[in-house]
Length: 294
Ligand code: SF4
Image 1 (spheres, rainbow, N blue to C red):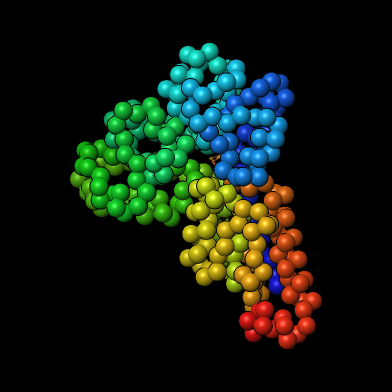
Image 2 (cartoon, rainbow, N blue to C red):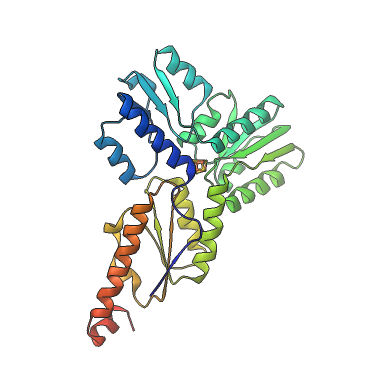
């Protein structure tokens, strides 16, 4: 069984830097993070173990210092936080800031802003938090529900799959041919790299394992992208989720991971797959044939 790692996988620089900043500030004093720093249970329990608190709303913060995650937040939320006398540490990823600037430019130029993304995702709430009017769309049905505007300015959540974004942009264009529409591509490069590397890997694999948190948007996007090219795709959070029967008769096992998955979690998943392979090889030939479905 050959294990084929995608050329780009796992934690991006934005999440890595945000975790480093959280650890640095936690050393200096009590710290609360606004929302989940990353959508990965392994990282979150490590932060919890060193007493970093998490609050979903600034009103619930009990420490003097609050950290904004890599997903960013709106100027309105920042102002509210500062008005409460809290010190704010911003771990906002530079590529999320690019998306904020794109949205601000669209609104400034008189476009009705449409974000392609998940309505309740913390990044989308941050992108739309300073706007009085906007729409968030994710699929064809959402586009059909849009109202007409003379000027439509479209941007995307940074972790959406670019093919899906292009499809939605095209749909909006066709639905409102009379509108002046401007699209600013705000999907980040690490997401694009992981998506295209996943496609290349999934085309060659009999089974694909995607490592990442269940609530991680980019991990879910990797799962659905790989599923277009490989019929046997499984998402795992850790090595404990691996099931031996998934690898029946598999010759090539593809491996990829979301942008919030630490390297050691990916390594343990790979080690577990090798362990399963060794167990299959150690079986008597007749039993192995049954296990591999031959
Ligand atoms: S996924 Fe992209 S935008 Fe989000 S933290 Fe990573 S690099 Fe930044």
